[in-house]
Structure formats: structure tokens, C-alpha cells
Length: 493
Figure (spheres, rainbow, N blue to C red):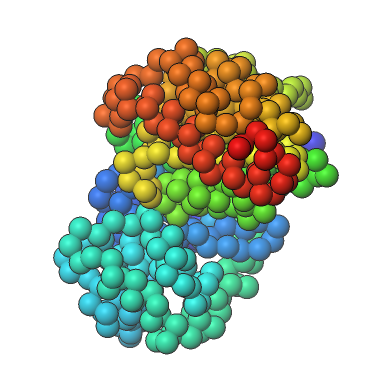
């Protein structure tokens, strides 16, 4: 069946349908709002998805359900908005000037000073309020990880979040009361057509489905693939790179599938961190802290697990954890698929085991065994919304004598790729799980890694951190294993 073609991007902006035929692959939503539509409540701060001043809500359909999420307009490309509903701060106040309950709460608690960051905070709190009308402090703080305030302080903003429910009725909110109508509008826009605009470096493509994507990429192997744009967005805003032609993927529902089999979990390459979170923490509760520290809420709403793996960054948060779990990458070129252990997918800095025209289609993650001991630690300068200096994943099993039967230890930030510590693993394997084995294994880190010094951390610091994380893993889990099985007393004592 021949695909139908459309030569325009269509989306809903507040209460109006927008149709664009002249979209550049690198045009950001922030520039479109401020320069084209003169909607200047959305601010530009960092232009890299860190400060949250540009936060807007984007509603999109999945399985017929409409969900709104906070996103960073500064690194979200207009080309990725086809079939979506963009909501800016201008849409919140009533036509008579009545403030929205979230805005009124910010006023009542004196939560704004210079006001530059305020629209971003309002939109993040609005997104939280729609999903959770009575959040606790931890949930509020998590929703605001991606928003920075330099003058007011966060206490007043948190008080505003706590007081919203007392001020306004969620059931009267426009995005709630109008949800059925907006859903129908978006369904009409989501026509399943192959979208193409522009020529040459200014060409952007939205494939109709995954099979169409495979065909497009096979014919255009040099095209830039954009899923969440949390990385590629910075290529444009910070490095001024020319990335066209571009193929956008965030609209492809088939890449957002999650499957829970008896022995493994499958995440489609387009599954965002937010979408993956419930199933990840259910099967791997050890990843809860790591997952909650991947960027801010806006980044987790946009960024994809598949993209984090595909780009091969040595400081990506998920690869060390996935290596520790023995995950595999499902690659596709045309109609041909192959699976690669994730640890072998990363070849060297900037190079992955992915042929021209081939793409990451899914990640398969085996479940842990009942005797597996597993932890992941992220070390960064800031606790929240920061890039890893070092990220380490540790997984061992012990035999009945308390000896290490199997060890998998993987690190990010220690080499040009995410990498296993094979010498450390070899030192531990067969050894009694005690402090002597830990100290001997720690000395082997120098055989595995020659880390670089950069602005995040020095080489010496990284080596020291890696050794100390191994010690931490032992201290946290040795006693736990002893108590749980109560059969290793000779080995530990």
C-alpha cells in the first residue's frame, strides 16, 4: 500500500490549530513561540534544558489517551510537535484576567521575586497538579528538579504547590474539562501520513510508521535521528551544528511499546524515562534513585532510554545499569534485525556497533535472579539534574560458601565508552566476599581504566570514586546478604 504524503506540520497551540509548511529541522519551539507567535511568557535562560524558564506543557496521544507533560521548549524542535497540543503560560489566566489557581498560589505565597523563572515554575506545577492534585513534599521537589530559581528561594514555591488544591477545583480546569474535545482534535490531526518538508539539509521527515522509518533511514543513512532531542537539541543551541536532514520519531507509537515477558522486559527505543519509570522500579527497585536523578522532570518526559543507549555517550546514565543487567540492544536495518549485548554495542568513543542505515529498535532487559545482588550509584556535582562524573553498576552472586560466583561491574565516566571492569571482576570471582577481597579488587581498577581529567572530575578523583563505590557496594550489601540467607557466617566472621 502506497503511503500518503503530507507537506506540513500540524499541531494545536493553546486553542488554535497551527499548520506550518516552512519548518526548519532546527527550529525550536521556544523560538517559534517568542519570535513567530509573540508568546513571550515562555523565557529563554540556559538554552540547554537545565533551568526550566522555557517550560511548557505538551499533550500527546498514546493508545487514544491524552497526557500532558512538562517539556523544555528551548530544545524541543517544532518538527516533533505534529499531532500534539502545546500549552503555554498565556493560556492559564481567564479571559477576564482571573488568575489560574497555580498562578494565584504563587502570588499568595510570595513565590515570585524577579519573575523571570516564574512562568516555568507555574507550568511545571500545573503539570504536577493535573497528575496529582495532592502531592507530598517529595513529589513536589521531584517535579521541580528541572526548574531553577536564583532569587526567591524554593520554600515559598513549595508552599505554593501545597496550597493549589485549596485554591482551585481541578475538575474545573480547562485541560480537564476540554479533554474530550482536544482528544478529538488531535485524533483528526494524527492522520498516519508520511510527512516531509524542505530539501537537502533543510529536509525533515516524520515517517508514517516504524517500517516506513526503516525504509527512510536505509535510503538516507546520513540523516540525524531525533527522538527526545535532549542531546541533539544542544547540538543546535550550543554548538550551532547543522543536523539536517532530520528524521523525527517521537510520534511513532510502535517505538513506545513496553512488554513484560516471563523472563525479561522490553522497552521500545522511543519509550521515555517517564514512561519507563513504573515498570523499571517494579522489576528493578535498585534503579529508583538513579532514574529519579536523570535530568529534571522535563528531560525525563522528553528523553528516551533508546536514545541514551544509541548515542553511545561515555557518561550516559542508563548504559552502566543496563550492562549490569545483561541487557541486549535490538538493531534493525530495513527488514533485518539483530541483537547485540549492550556491553559490545559500545566500541570506542563516538563509535557504536551500528551500520549505516541501522537503528536501535528496542532494549531487552533480563530480570534479576533471586540470588543476584545489584546496585547502581551515580556521582555528580549536584544531586539533581546533573551529568554523571562517575556512574557505577555492580552485580554479584555468591555460592553457598560465600564466594563470588559471578561478578559484573560496569562504569560510565571512566573511559571513552561505558565499560566493564574486567580485571576487577576477575579479582573478585572465586574470592570470599569479604574486605580482603574488596581491597585486592580495588587495586585492579588501574588495570581496567585510565580515566580523563575534565571539568567534571579529575582522573585521580574518578579512580578513587570507583574504588570507594566498590567498598560501598560491599558495605551496603554484605550484611544484607548475610541476614537474608543466614548461611555465610564462616565467610564473614
